Each structure stands twice: as C-alpha cells, then as structure tokens.
Image (tube, rainbow, N blue to C red; front, side):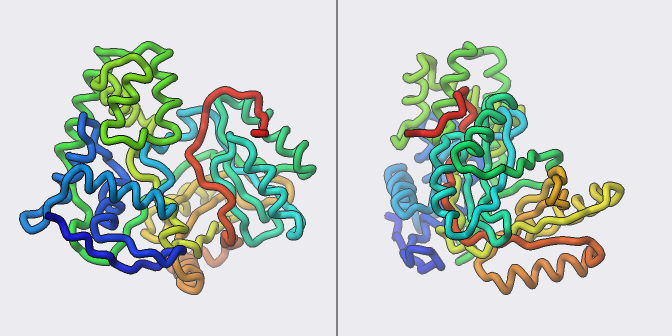
Amino acid sequence: MAIHQSVPLDLKSNSLISQLQQDIINNFQRGLPLCEKPYQVMAEKLSTPKCTFSETQIFDAIQGLDELNIISRIGPVFDHKKAGASTLAAIAAPPEELDNVASIVNQFEQVNHNYGREHDYNLWFVVTASDLVALNETISRIEALTGYSVLVLPMEASYHIDLAFSINITEQHSALVNSNHLTSEQNLAEKAKLNKLTETQKSQLRNGIEKGLPKVLAPYAQLAEQISASEQQVHQQIALWLQEGLIRRFGLVIKHRSLGFDANAMVVWDVPAEELDNIANRLAKCPEVSLCYQRPRREGWPYNLFCMIHGRDRDVVLKQIKQLRESLTLTHIEHDVLFSFKAYKQNGAKYGRSKGRAHG
C-alpha cells in the first residue's frame, strides 16, 4: 500500500501536495499513456517494490491537483502554426482600467492566456482561431469592445518552447525514461494511417480533447463513444498527431503560478537581423529559458526576440538575466524585462470556427 506523504511546497494556496502528486507532475507532463487504462499504466510506472499504487490512487491524486488549481487540464498542447492561426497580443490600458479591460478580453473563448505585465503595454494575451481571417475578426472585436488598439505580434520563428515544470523536492521517481511508450506511440501512429477516422470524426476528436480529457478512469473510451469510433482509433489518431507535430506534448498542463512560479519575466530584445538566429539559438540552449521565439517589430515596439524565464524569486530571475547578458555577450543589445503580476486567464487554446464573438 502506498504512503501518501504530504510535502510542503511554495504554493499560492499554502497547501500540501503529496509525494505521489509531485511524482505525477514530474513525470506526466509529457507522454500520457495512450491505452485502455492510462491511470493503471501510470500507477505501474510510479510503483516501486516498497511502494505500489493503484489506478484509482493515481486518478484521485490528479483530481486533488485539479481541486488545488494546480493543473489546467490533462491533454494536448497544440502547435499553434499547425493547429490554426494564433498571435500574442497586448493592450496599453490605464492602470485603473486594467481589470475591466482584462475582463472584456477574457470573455472571448479564443483568448486562452491573459496576463498583466509591468510595462506601458500592461495586458498580454494569446488569441487563437481556425484561420487568419477569424483571428483578425476576433482582434477587431476586442478593439471595438475595449476601446483600445491591440498590438499584434504573431510568432515568426520558434527556437525553444518547453513549459513543463519540475518539482525538485526529492529525487524519488525523478525523470523516468519511458522509451517503450515512445515505441508504442510510433506503432500506434502507423496503424492510424491504415485505420483512418473520417474528417468529421477527427474534427470531433480535436474539439473533444482541446479542453482536456474527460475526468473518468477510461477517458479514451468515452471519447471514442462520443465520435462513434473505436477506442483503438482514438489512441492511434492522437499518436499520429504527436508524430506529425500537430500536438507538441500530451499530458498534464500545469498552472505554474499555483506551484509558486510567479516571478515570471518576459525578456524582449531588439536584435539586429544579422545576429538574430545566432543569439536566439544560444539563448534557447540556456536552461533558465523556457520559451524563445521571434516576433515582428511594430511602430512603438522595437523588440523582435522574446524569451521567458519562469522563477519563484524576482531577484533570482533578475540575476539570471544579468548573467545571461554577460555570458552570452548581449550587453550591447537593447532589452526590456516585463514581469507578470497577475494571471487573468490560463486555459487551453481553442481553434474551432467562430464569429469572433465574446461570451455573453
């Protein structure tokens, strides 16, 4: 029988999460099993001779993380460029109006992330849509309802994207390697090419997993029933999307601020075009950097390279930025640091067709 040891973490809620929950976070932000009993497979992966788990214990531990607002969902993180159209966007709102403007932006289901940041452009959000026309319609609607122009900054090149967060409280069960699961995914993807879903079924499945897997012990079976397909076809199609890169990772999606990662800096750089690839590739290799991508300059916005550093301590993050600038010889590059101070929204991206309307 497993022992659920509660270990204090620097959580916003000052709650305790068990060692089992930590191990789940550390090991299943990628590579959630694609099989009939995923929670049973997870239990087997995390069990040791001295400590065994059941699928219901794994399921209950994950539901507990959900109740603590630590996980956003269990499911896919799509590649924005392959899944549809998307952009990072920003509004410069008077500080006294920021909460109200943010609430208007949040009404749009096409907006999945929305943060307050320390800058004249103080509201930063991500908009996704089925295509560029729908994306532009949504942005126009946001401008009309808020009364403010939107700074539109679509991704032009991606150098590094990895928003998986590790809890390094103990070394127990840390960083499991699951090569057999990778082989299984490849085999499933090959079968999907022969055992195809219809386009309607694929669309229904994508819509079904965008918001996360059903909260049941057999989530793929429930998805299969919803789209009138076999459970094996669901496993195979998700594996194929992973292989093709439509899905970048498949597993727990963590709300990092709930884990204490609230000293998060978006560092923006004004990099000469001839130096961009070199500098971006070097930044992308730094362990402190969780995101690194190119976006366009705009009038009044001179920065073309963005990187994110997620941390628990503001002074530590500032020190890391200073060290990066010195070690990579970037002191000649103009830059700015935009710390987030409030998370207004953090959901999964939605790419379904819409009229660009807000809820309500």
